[in-house]
Image (tube, rainbow, N blue to C red; front, side, top):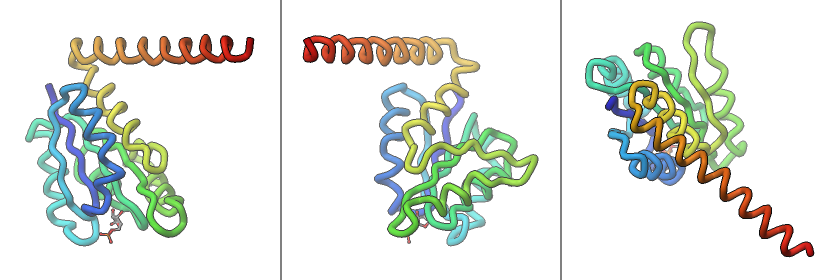
Length: 163
Ligand code: RP5
């Protein structure tokens, strides 16, 4: 199975990224997580993205806050799909990071999830990896079915309460 490369701009992003790490572990998808900054360690960030395809990665996830250029900087170095997580910081509620991540120039897409949406970033990465892994696709189908069932259970509970 191809690996997921998860890069965060600062160790202070780890809390926001944790749901992605947990989901990748739960789905048993091999991954590497690194702290590489587009601004503070640009050479390492670029080298990681440049070598990612030949190093067995199938998709990259980048989490960064403030002037969040990390996802775009990785996308500039690889044609692997790159998923961006805008991280909420102490000012501007993450809108700064959202706009910095999502507004990529034509030809260099970054699939941007919601502010602090790291769970969905890992889910999207899993869906991409599942294109070439039937077992993982099956796990995702089962997870979707269980989500569906739990919504119906909640509805049944609500109907009971309202009687
Ligand atoms: C970004 O700046 C990081 O991704 C982080 O979200 C934000 C703040 O970084 P620290 O100053 O906490 O290291 O580069």
